[in-house]
Every structure is written in C-alpha cells, then in structure tokens.
Length: 341
Image (cartoon, rainbow, N blue to C red; front, side, top):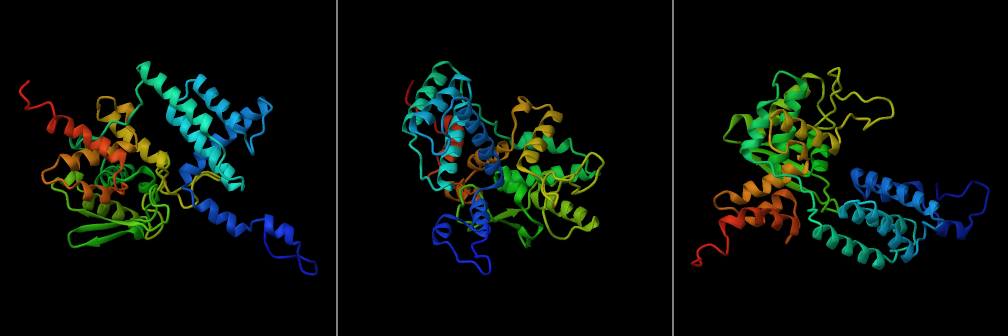
C-alpha cells in the first residue's frame, strides 16, 4: 500500500500512522532469509489452524495459548527443535504485526520439560553426521564429470565443504561473488544466518592437494561450463531439470533466475552419499559439509580456532562450533588420559 494520498483527497493522519508502504514491507521481508521465511510461514499456518480449532485468538495470542500449543506439539511427538522454531515463528509474527514479543514463559517451561523427557527416554537429538575427507572423496568419485549435473554437484559439494558454508549460503552465491586470486579464489558471502546486518564476509579458498576435491578447480570447471551455456552473471549454482536443461524453471515454481535452493544442496549431498554407499548416508544433510569442515580443520596440525570461526562465519564463542571440535578433543585431549588410570 502506498503512503502517498490520492490526488485531490486529504490524507488521514491516523491511517498514515498505522499503515506501512509496499517498500517498507518489502524491506521487512528481505530482513529474513528465504528458507527461514518459508519455515516460519508454514509454522504460523499450523499455529493459526490449531487456534481456530481450539477457538483461541492467534494474534495477539495469550501466554496460555502459546503454552498450550507448545504442549500440543510435545504430545504429538514433534522434535524439540521443531517446537523451538514454532515459538520463534509466533514471536516473529507478533513483532511484525506490531504487537511486540508475546509472553512465551509458559511455553519455554513446557519445552524445557519436554527436552528433559526426551533425553530421559533416550531419544537423542538427531544430528547431521560430519562429512570426512575420505567420505568427501568417495562422494565426488561417484559423479560423472562429462555431465552438467556431475560438474555442478562436484562444485557444490567441494566448495561448500571448503567454505564450511551453510546450505543457504551455497545456494545464494552469484557468479560475481567468486573472484580469482593468485593463491586460489575469493568468495564473498553476502548474507548469512549470523550476519543480520548484511556486512558479508570474504572466504579465501586455496588450491587443494587432491585434484578431484580441489575447490578452485571445481569452481573453474563449473564456471567454464556455465560460460559455454551463455551464463556470465546471475546465480552461481543453477537448477538442472530431468531433461538436462540448465536454469529452467516451471511456471510459478522456484527462483525466476533458476537458482538452486538450500533443499537442493541437501539433496545433492544425500544423493552422492547414497551412491558412495556411505554408512548412515540417508542422514547426511547440507549441514554435514559445515560440520565436516569444522572437525577436519580443527584436527589439522596448527589448527587455529579463531580462523576456523571467521572462515565459516561462526559467531565468537559459538556453542555449535565448540560442539563440533569437542568431537575431536574428546579423544585427542581427553582429560582422563594420562592420569594413571
């Protein structure tokens, strides 16, 4: 809705104080990544549907309503992380609508109690397995270098691993984000989950010692392939349909530019893991690249935790990053070792 009055009419000051222009709404929308926005939208639809069934108000929702909904999700055996995201979606909807943060104290207690029951029942939180260098090489070996899909998937997997990137960061890359350097390539990550201000980060990718898993060579081959198809700008990684068409998008589906999604990144990784016959291949996700990079980088000689965090875009003191390196340290620096047991 425009904030400009219709010619010949007086502007209603009350309406102007309570309305947002289309431009403002667009900026609010752009503040949230596409994948998060889609998840929040689906969570909000489920919440409003449940409220309608229970004859409760969804907006603004009372503390009791939100707590009851959290309890409903727990009773239907949703994962704790799913419940946490649903609460975040409810909060986001209230804030965007101008109602401020809703009272989630009761819902938070419900979630805390549910997490305890979840742990006591032996249902551990499902984690994406970390991709090792050995597994990475096995996956890349299954890809056909003479096909569009093979060249693209190799670049997605190898570059994503070398960057320690989130799947959304991989999907969001443009051709102009990749610049050659004497030592390799520099990749600009313009937006990420922990970079709310959009400051971006520069990731340096050096040449690899193994030709098959070298991120610089993988990127070069993919960019050469894109150039042969007349692609010199736009998304770095494009959809390839079952007919082998590059960047083709069915009407009304996906990015108009043909960009892959974070879900596509996860599918590429899982597909390669299954073909390679890896243990627990079906559990591999886009996060397996990021987790694998963190553990491999930390296990390397002269590992620098600060540099690892900056490279992968982890916040200082990130609990997630410390969790990954603990998998390395639990044996390499085990406090029970060497105490005379």
